[in-house]
Image (cartoon, rainbow, N blue to C red; front, side):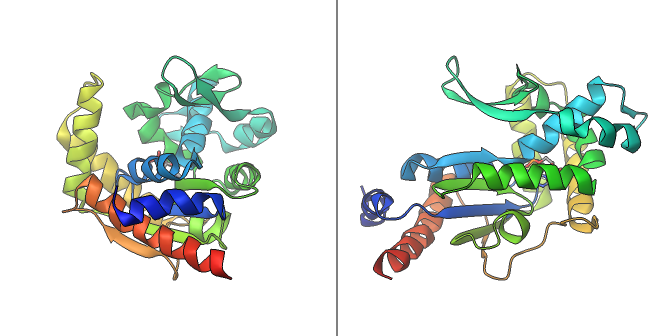
Length: 246
Ligand code: DC
């Protein structure tokens, strides 16, 4: 165990901070978030899963048809949509629950990925999910990833990362992941989805994806997952050290 890894474990007991990870789609945010959460014994929260769950709800209830969202009816039912995370004994992982149903796998499929940017710009959807995320993150000891975590959800997070990678590298990674799960997709389709979500995420009026001024920027186009983890953990250890001495 390297000194940074050792220190990382030791100071977990000192102060439980909030770690915000934002960045472009398919950048490996969740991989890094899970690694940090596991190492520090923190809770990992996937905020994107919550937007995906709302999109799935809209799709299943006839509120998305021909790439169009029936916003008025979504707003009417929004207070009744129940989203939570629950430990799944079978996979030993956290699963996204939509109205009590495990939708963890379903929300990762391409049709949901393609429809999620219809619901994510809706201010009322964001307000509901941001509030839920803030409640889940109360008390610290949390790693949350998304697009607006360091800017809107937890602007006072002790450590913020902003992740990026070249679109072709991200598409290739996502393609292999989807293929590995048996999905019928082409690399072109995945790249188009990545580029479309980049554009939608950065140009929407409500809480667009922007770099927090105090975020550590990580471009992982040419980094291994282990190199990236070491880099990030170094920043976390430094931050907890400073807080612990204060
Ligand atoms: O991280 P992801 O690809 O699973 O996110 C799914 C979508 O949800 C993505 O297109 C952007 C949106 N999203 C968002 O608007 N705000 C967040 N905090 C997280 C995700």
